[in-house]
Amino acid sequence: REQIVAVKEAVATLTQREKDITHQGETVKKDIEVMLKQIIDFLQSDVDLAVRHKLSMLSQQKRKAETTLGQLTDCFDFVEQGLKVGTPQQVLLAQQQMIDRTNSVIKSFKPQSFQPLEQADIKLVKSKKIEDVHKSIGEVRYSSSCKVRNIDRHLALM
Image 1 (cartoon, rainbow, N blue to C red):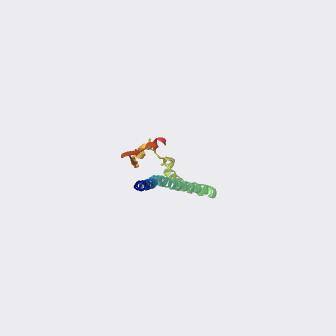
Image 2 (image 1 turned 90 degrees about the horizontal axis):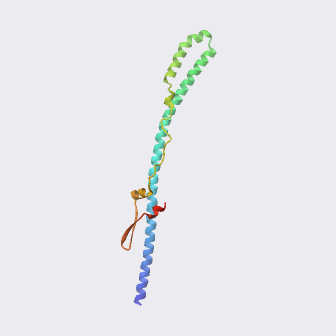
Image 3 (image 1 turned 90 degrees about the vertical axis):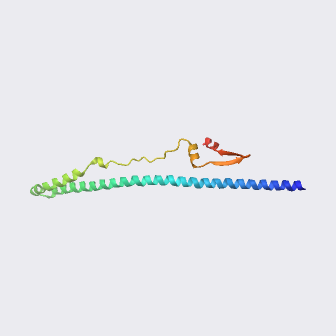
């Protein structure tokens, strides 16, 4: 009878250990998910920052280009209107004013300054080896027959 009780206790202990190991495995998987979510959030925030910076720079450039476009349009409209409406004497009288206004706008106009300063070059630079990333964020360890093992053989399959 004692042997049956001892074996039942051993089975119960082994069953409990199975549950403990399964629970530990699930806990580690959840920890990995949380860690990876944090890494993803961090990298995505870097992307968002880069996008905001580049768009801000382009927005400033675009505002300057639109201002210059408005000035050029106003200037040419002014000249055209003066030539259409005015008599030859009025056009001659306003000629210097039209020349001055046109010259001031043209002097401030530099087409090369409207080339985009920012490049569309945002990209993810991946590590050469997944093993390198794996080692820098953590490793899964377990003991087996009193020997500690690092689990990274599954990475070779990736």
